[in-house]
Length: 236
Image (cartoon, rainbow, N blue to C red; front, side, top):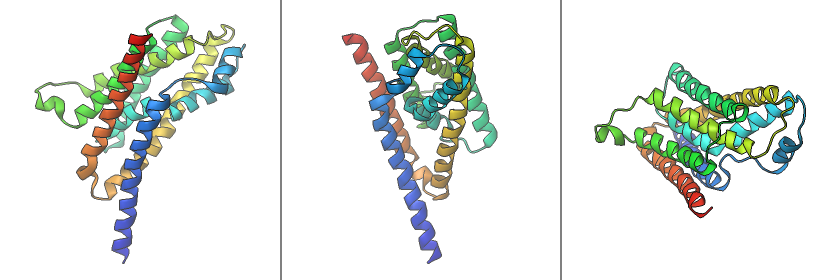
């Protein structure tokens, strides 16, 4: 009886994770990593050093930034050791921080549609790598360098959103540092939840059986995100 109950619980965990991936796919198409609503209103009107609210908004952005979460889910999909997870996530965080701060504080400007399309493609790239597509083609890619480079794209994508809000220069440096710190905290929180889900899935004993399905979902999500942005670029 205990064995059956354990199998049932693992099966539910597995279905829950696949359901989560489907939910994230839909949510990614719907909202990606834009800044809107009350958050946009606050950022537009804020003047002076306000580290608390900016820290909170940074954390909220990462927790609800479905494009980032999709990419990070792909990055840690087949990582089992904490040291490996920490290495890859740190590389992503460094890249993300450099272009987020450089874009807002340094005035680095790029087309939002183009950079967001590249973010979508980063999700698809990681899914293809997990599916072994590049090895099949005889293409060797340094995964760590790729994660760092895509971190640069992700940070620049958020920077374009903040640049559109014409943030006040009063206290901007401190506010952006607080915002970035919030992003990193939010990333840790989101990754903890994703890792927990992956561990439950792996303990079911059927992780490898359905791993390809999960990565095909990631691949689809990435192409959908990129396609929407390319369409926006062409029609704008």
